[in-house]
Length: 88
Image (cartoon, rainbow, N blue to C red; front, top):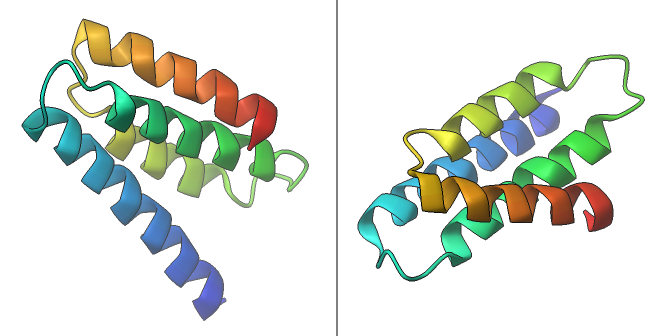
């Protein structure tokens, strides 16, 4: 249980750092939003079929990753989300 909790906290921290980078980085660089979307998409894919045990993790990471995205970042986030859902 502790290992799972550490992995969950790590994923949330990564998503928060990516979100923070989107606010501080150059507006022309969509890579942070794409990475955040990919992370969430991959987590959602991995959580499928786990009877909801990872639902809270996915919700927390998604909330951290999408906090205050502007319109352009949201579009890039969605691109990453789709890729993560397909390939993650």
